[in-house]
Length: 348
Ligand SMILES: [Mg+2]
Image 1 (cartoon, rainbow, N blue to C red):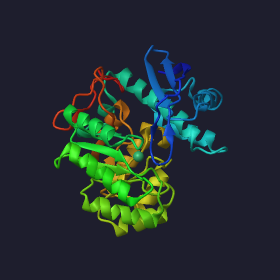
Image 2: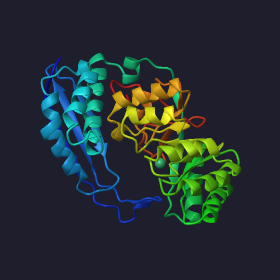
Image 3: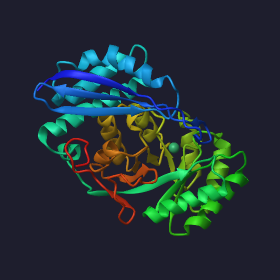
Image 4: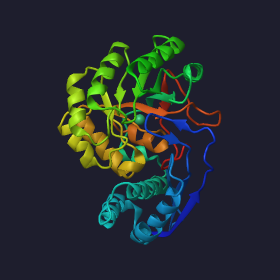
């Protein structure tokens, strides 16, 4: 089997008039790039990379895939997906295999695995060897721009859907405001529901220790990205100083980045992002490495690729998702969601 065609499709999305906001940035959304590979046997595979912001990002990514990555993929056998992953990293090394490059590598790596699964008529988790049929999921719903009433309503809605944990944004100007936000949500969801807090890199290490102690005493599940993502010394200090688990990784770019954090005991829960680490090949590597360090894996973002990966990880802790829309194939049962059963990364 070899790849005869690769199509690249830009999906533009007008900016939302009411963008969500966290402590770092506003997220109006700006579209995505979808790739599809076609093989000589007629089997296809699809992958996609989306952007929460930066209006020109989809066009820039499409150009990078067209000019740099596509020539490496055409004519190749998808069965050599790990080899192609290495080739894409090597090709982009000159300008940096991080940032936009990993978004493109992720889309193609996803399409290659999807194609392999479809060629064999089985889900990717079966190609890799599974452990779980279902994994716990939490709802990331508590955006920073919501007022108290709004955040209570949406968190209650998540609980009504069957979630047993919700995540809220913190990193308000003062500690008192952060405490108040957790208390407001606690009143809405009750004592049995887990609450994760996420400051999106907005604090100094000293401030993050103080707020972490407060979140600890409020019984929060984890303390996410309190300080800049690359501050490994700061994260090591926080993990030492606090009992609440420190979760980070959505802004790290490679298995080597995660290796440095794990070696330094600078992370308690790893949270790799499909696009930033460069696709399922890298997610599997990071998940297995974290398992060897006995650290849980929580996805950054949801979707069928993360679910297929988590099905194979002994340390799978939580899938991140939003409220489940009526047309979604996801079904919550006792706070868990099912692993997709369709070929490749498809649902059915
Ligand atoms: Mg986060």
